Length: 568
Image 1 (cartoon, rainbow, N blue to C red):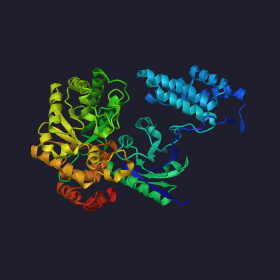
Image 2 (cartoon, rainbow, N blue to C red):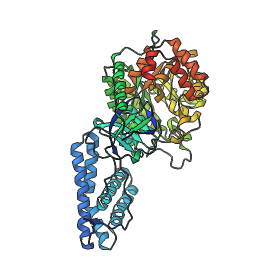
Image 3 (cartoon, one colour):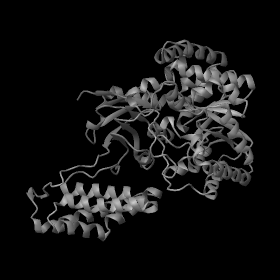
Image 4 (cartoon, rainbow, N blue to C red):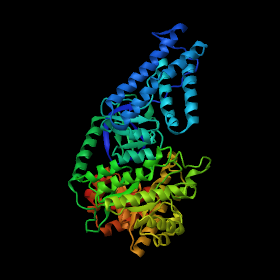
């Protein structure tokens, strides 16, 4: 069988080979679909038993999965199994059947009623709505003889393929058996891709046709080349294995981040939880880092129905700071809104949420969210005896930077900075930096706002390329401001994890690079094989290019021969 190549957009550098497991969408049969068993319609008087068996099958399946799972994933599955076994659902469905309602419609009407009721009750009850919908979809699938929807249990290391995958689904995957993630939708700077990168899982997005690849088909996922190879030949597989062997060489070097002539560049890691911090801090191989350049605190808030208490926040921050000991930790205050809505804070009727009340701007309508978060950070600093760096997202003006700095210092925090994600802030970087101690560039959002392109709009992905010269001009402007004032300028966007871009950013004057843990070895390798002068030449080449593609190609031409073989 000849290989078939499906192009996509890669996240990360790794390549793997494995069997496909499709994430199934819920089936949507007609509400009056005829239920069959053994090829014949089920008599009406037997439908109550068939429906009861469907509920029992779903409950048993979920309970069995819960027993095999661990941690929060097991708890979620066990809770959903209990919902499927709730007698009220079956009783309600059978009551509908007795009135002549067809089975599928009876299930949908009964569970739909509970969904409406729980939604109206709000709070903890509203959190059960997703579980109810999951039970409904599973029972309907069993009734009509269709595969169960969702992420199937992985019996062996597999390539998970989905039309799209919610970040929560990504985070709940059995990482020991996920070789790679492939989606038909999404973008490389979307949060599913970011989480996959953070977990060190190779990822491809925007792969048209991936959903048609049958379960069990052997595929090659090459994130660096942005391709999904269906039924790869032996030569392709052998090439991937040679590349994997070569990359092992990257893990022989654990020296601090620096160029070949000793110019220091802090290599940091992006984290979202204290568990991430513990994992990163414990790395003693080539992934060893100088700390965290981006602690995404919104992970604490996103699934909550009310703001976490100061005590709960302080406990999480304390654990993260303690994990890194005396190493640097840059904490970003709440960055919610737009594609990260908060149940208790996001405005419901924003027409353009990416341009609305998000990030630092949430403080305009919910000021306590910021003051309580800063208070919690102050408590964590006192508890650990360390001083976190703290920064605010979505700062647009020097005045906002000054206001945030005053609030943070009032909470006892002494290292205060802001994110540069908005062109206005980059263009006024010197004035912004005059108000704070440091800045950090978020290149995903900076590209979004510079190129007027929604970061979730996968069909416009070329415009979001961090190699776009216009985006690099704003990075250069910010870095010049940092040099002029003698203050640090970091990058904590995903571009920091691209070893070629890391060379360019260093040449532009960026002082630290924060990335997913898995990206560190290649970036360290690239820096240690080029001098600062070579990095500056690459930066000039990228800035002078007519396009993102030409800029990257110009930098490849300037790589050392050894680095070109491994990184280009």
